[in-house]
Each structure stands twice: as C-alpha cells, then as structure tokens.
Image 1 (cartoon, rainbow, N blue to C red):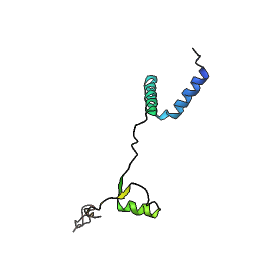
Image 2 (cartoon, rainbow, N blue to C red):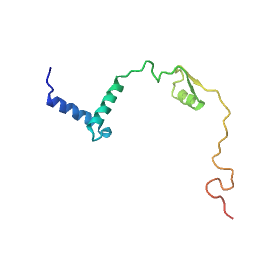
Image 3 (cartoon, rainbow, N blue to C red):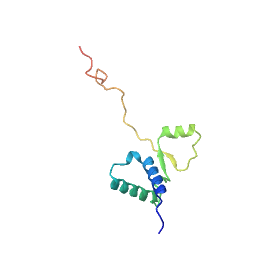
Image 4 (cartoon, helix red, strand yellow):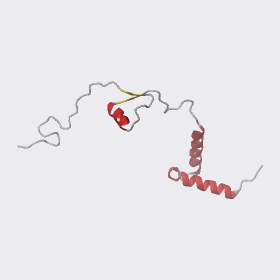
Length: 105
C-alpha cells in the first residue's frame, strides 16, 4: 500500500475548506457526509436533459423582443394564442384611488 502524504492531504483539505467554507459546520462527520453527497451529485448525469425543449410558447412581447434582436429564426419558438386577459386597473375604483382611506370630508 502507498503512503498518505501529509502535505498533499493538508493542501487538498485547505482547498475544500476554501471552496465550501460557507456550507461547512464545526462537526467533522457532518462535513464529511455533505462532501460525499456533493461528490455523488457531481457524478450523476441524467439520461435526458431538463433544459432540452422542442417547443416553447412565448407571448407577443417576447416575440417582438426577439425580432428586434434579429433572432426570429430560433427553432421551436412559437407565439402563444392570444387569450382575452382580464383588465388590470392601476387604481381602485373607489373614490380615493385605492391608496389609503380615501378623501375625507
């Protein structure tokens, strides 16, 4: 069996502590568990990407923005069907505008 070189171990432990200092606790065993879970997640590769999207529906504003940038030929991007939206009012229909108790007499 080979030797464990003290200098190498200390250097790698310093690097781990520097990199993940904000997530470390004062308990060694908890830190070791967290590091093992992190390494396990780094090795995991999903079968199909979550960001792979063949069809994207966007609103008219987004289509206009893409057109102004010259990116209208992106495959899979389509404008969604316009649905009648409920009107939004910037102020309440109450006599004071909706900000507070209203006008006092």
